[in-house]
Image (cartoon, rainbow, N blue to C red):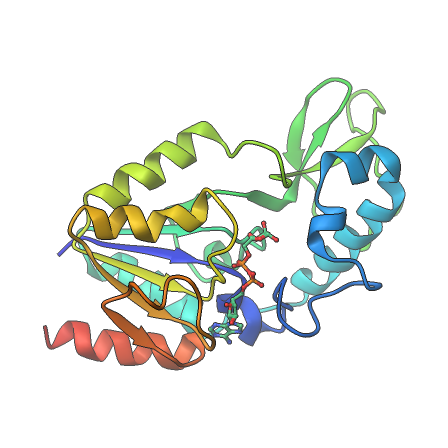
Length: 231
Ligand code: APR
């Protein structure tokens, strides 16, 4: 059985990382749509970097939770298992997942606006804001996908390819309102997959899912695995 999983911020909530659209998701009363954009960064790189620095510090202290760990275990158990994430927190990798398709990049990677160098910068808190390029001293930006920017081509085509060829498409902890990631469950459904959603709240995916598990990620995933292993 070919299982493809798509995760969103909800899977990291139990690790203490606020989601984007739930309560507690705002930072200094800014919405992500007001900060995670090229325009916001061009206008005030210091403010945008202060938001990322806050998130990087949170994430540096966060541990993967049971849901991350169960998915890492599943990767080793199933011969056809693929994990696609919208999250940039790297907690899937920290939990031991080897193959992670990161659609929106990774908060620990930075890219230089001058020389285009891209590398990991684990400093948290950042000594200098905005941080400067190791190689040329130019201005760095987070190597994550901002609103209005295109997703990495390879990861995006891989994700859509997987969605068209899976038996079960499991969606965990995403509001499903950001595209193109939000299309993936619908593409899977159109190609005959059974769609399962684990989410605390109702989303646009809930109505078309074959099974909705209205639980937090770690509990819902345990229930799913029990059901799946008895399939
Ligand atoms: N368990 C399961 N689901 C949860 C939990 C939990 N403990 N806590 C919250 N949720 C659900 C919320 O009900 C919501 O549906 O997780 C979802 C989180 O939605 P968002 O905050 O919108 O996060 P996400 O869907 O990942 O956002 C997508 O938007 O801001 C951009 O690029 C950013 O990748 C992000 C994208």
